[in-house]
Length: 127
Image 1 (cartoon, rainbow, N blue to C red):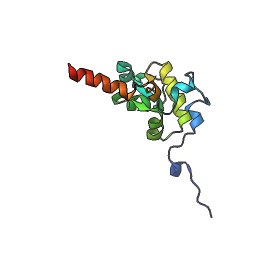
Image 2 (cartoon, rainbow, N blue to C red; image 1 turned 120 degrees about the vertical axis):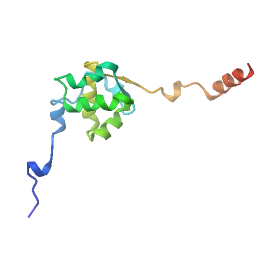
Image 3 (cartoon, one colour; image 1 turned 90 degrees about the vertical axis):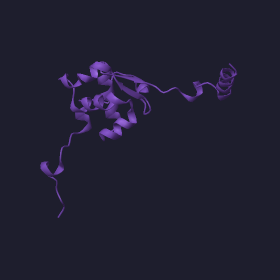
Image 4 (cartoon, rainbow, N blue to C red; image 1 turned 180 degrees about the vertical axis):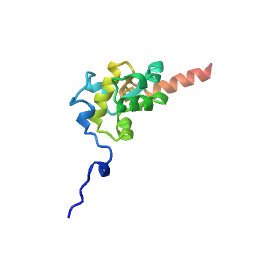
C-alpha cells in the first residue's frame, strides 16, 4: 500500500502560480532581474512592509531579508525555497510598490584595467 499524504501530513503547500496569481512575468524587464541582480530594500518604506495589505507573506519576507544587506535574486530564491521565476515576479511587484530597488553589479568588462589602477596607486604614492 502506498503512503498518502493528507493536508495535515503534507504541511503548508502553496503552488507557485498561486503566489504570483498565475503570472509568469512581472512588469519589470526580465534582464534587470537576472540571477546576480542585487535587491535592496528602500529605507523607511521597508519598515512599513508589514502594513501593506496587498502584499503576500512572501513579499514581506523578501523585503525583510533585503533590509540589512542587499541580496541577489538567486540568494532570495534559495533562502525562500521558491523557484527563481516566482521570486522574479514577486520582486517585480515590490519594485512597482517602491519597496525595493534593483541594481546590477558592474560587468568585468567595464571595470578599469589593472594597469591603470596600478599607475594611479603609484602616482598617489609619489605625492
